[in-house]
Image (tube, rainbow, N blue to C red):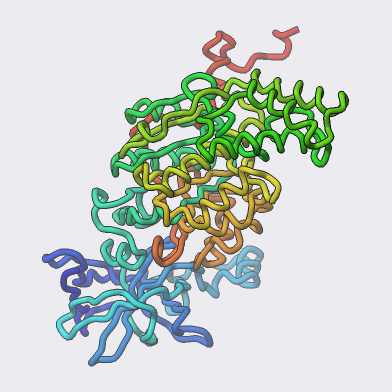
Length: 539
């Protein structure tokens, strides 16, 4: 960051917006407006809260960052603060004065802000970071607030480089994960350090809020950074984007299969219809399956299929005293039904496929929920094992509607696998991007370990489930979540990913957006219906 120049002591501030000489991030003087003056009351100024009178002609928006004079003469500093709210003070328009003026036939003209001595606007801001200044005005690195802003101190519009540094963003979109712009301060790019992807990503939002659009932006950034990605596509939203980014879309049974040996006994029971937990049939199937799995681990066989398992059930039934017809035969018949599952087949070649920049999109639109969970658990387990053995590069596994495969249920196999990846995946060079419209239904252990969060507009009843992931987002920002416009989200995280929560306008995508709500009304018009018809014409 370059020099920051103080405002001249004789600057006129009372009745106009003053252009002050202040610059961060460039060698030239860049005029920045003085927004207002810090005022004193019972709570401001403090190390947490700053209230300032807004100058006539100046404006701020919620979430905007401003800088406030602070420190001593021999140790000047700027306190970077986030605007929370503002209100106008106008005693001419209090309820009584307004009522009297509407009833009595007297003139109602009075001086407006800038000429009146009693009309002003008051802004409340939250102090978030401090930037120390050297004697010549050169800024240092941001740190926690240590200097108390003083009443009468000046408040400036924050420079883009200041905002980026305080939030922990990189300055050049080419150096990291470029997501968009800080809302209300359109010249501040939101660029995360790529290391944030290793700490896992959460995307939440209601229907039509823009969460799948954001996932598409991340897909573009991952591809540009050379990160391999595997996506469990529940709604088919990344099919076109995968092709446009040079990736491939496969379908269970058509380009993508799993061998029976890739499953666990819990996966197997989940995949077999009609097997009740705790019965002899479940015990027999699970025991025979584990015998075959042990032989694979001991290199006594390379793999096994459905026919092998059916035979092993017959071989093991006498050893368990379960050779009775009402146990053995149903166990074999239910297991034989696995042949009808299209995704059971040869092992998908992850080692060859997952090179730097690879994009594998698994189209799971036609899968029933039990099959979706089995596929997700098997894919996650395969990738985790390969990552643990360093046989694949850093890879991101993403799942849409992940509340379906990671419910708050310890018995669910896919929940168990994803919980393990969320806990230690970053040590194996494995990241997660998980998207949901229903965080209340998600496993809490997974949710709290997703350390970079994109929070789009969501129903108020879902907010309780997100407590703990807002980081330092103020209550004003949290309350705005249900009303955020499409494509705008709150970005929060830990200090290593996002230093302070902020509102982001997600950038435009280059690839096609497969998650847009279809325009059914345009379809009706195109089919020849025309404008809304008169009821009399429809009889």
